[in-house]
Amino acid sequence: MAIVPRLMPGMGMGVVSTASTPSLRSRRDSVVSTARDAAGNVRVVVRVRGFLPRGEGAKCLIDMDPITQATTLLVPNNTDPTNSRSKMRRVIEEKSFTFDNSFWSHNQSDEHYAHQEDVYNSLGEEFLDHNFEGYHTCIFAYGQTGSGKSYTMMGTEDQPGLIPRTCEDLFSSRSHHDMETDETTERTARIRLVDLAGSERAKATEATGARLREGSNINKSLTTLGRVIAALADPKQQRTGKRNKDVVPYRDSILTWLLKDSLGGNSKTAMIACISPSDYDETLSTLRYADQAKRIRTRAVVNQDHVSAAERDAQIAAMAEEIRILQLQVSNSDSTKKETETKAQDERLEQYQNKIALMQRMMEDRTMISEGKIRSLTTENDALRLHLKLALESLKNPIKVEPARTISVGSFTFGNGDELGQHKENRTIDEAINEEEGYEYEFSDEDEAIDVGAREERASEMQGFMGDLLKDLNMFRKKICDDKGRFGREITVNVV
Image (cartoon, rainbow, N blue to C red; front, side, top):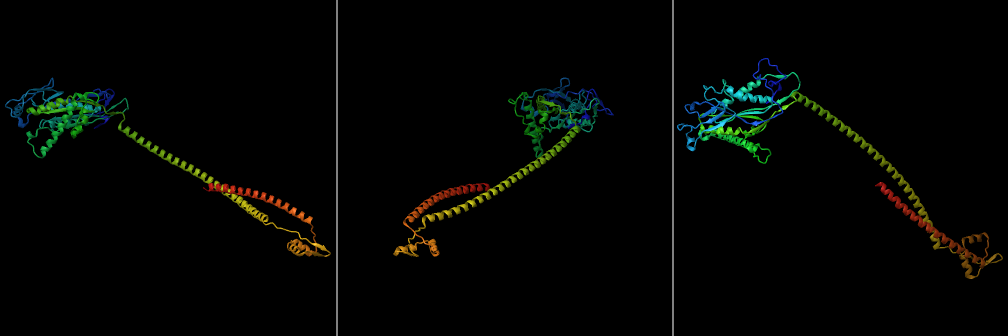
């Protein structure tokens, strides 16, 4: 339950009430410091109700001392039919318990009779004040069926109980504000008002069917609640550290899981033990239950926030707007970054394309130059091959020219036998032409010796020339091979 700050009671000095009519909560007590840790035991009160119509005439077994707040369970009479079975099983003795408050609601004619208003003033009003201070609170009623739990919590139209009075007091509170400061402190508190189902023995109620199953489930939850209270009341739970602590079985039932924070956590808790004035066994069980619960310690803290709901909503809205702006900035930054990266990539791609085009042009130029060199070298090589071939053929098959011998006698030339005919056959074309033109040649042995020596000299010169030519040819061949290998590799590398 969230408590609006302006519904808070008087805040001490500097706090002025704006109520037009007196408030039910007009006390101006000083506010307890909210920084402290309000640790304390569970507050336990006991209330005894009057006789039911079916129990009239029985003996009241409860005795309460209004000064010491002690509750004493007396020994029943031997003639009491209600407690006859308990006396047969064991020895009955008087039991005494001391609680925070003992409410005597058995006899209205008694001067210490506790009305509904008295119970609320001593318990409900105080816990509502704790709620306004920012503490979580819990009040739960426990007892057997017919012991007055529902009457204490809800009451009747004429005698309202804790729940109606708490709601009336809560919503009748007037707003207060501090005139000296504009600071707003928001406190959040939760109040739990629990009316537990009654625990009783199935044999005693003689219930069957759905009511029996319902009673079984109720007893199971209350048994688990008893084990939780026993575990929390154990002195081991008060020690620091986890070595000596036992596991509290909160999860064993839905009831204990819902009351987990109220029983052993951040809450101020009170237990109202409602007892019957005539049933010894059930009353003793309830009193033992309550006596064990009062040893449970809780650590309640103030749940407050110095930022109001409106301020928090404004901060959330401002943060949401800031997040939206930052998201837009991040989005714009990302888009700008992507555009810059895309532009840089395009520029690098264009540079690479230009480099590739330049390299392709250079490769084409080198290819053309290499092809021109190869063609010129091939042509030169072919010419050299042809020249070499002709030179080799002239060396292998030289032309032999033998001079003709003639004897000039007047205008006639005479030859003797076969020699003349043979010389005639071996004449050169020049000699035949000269003969037709009327020239005559005369040879002698001396001239023949001169011609043979000249031919041999020319032949040796020709052989030397041809040898030099072959060397040059080999050199050109090697050059052509080197050029082909070099240009061929360069072309291959550039293409790849």
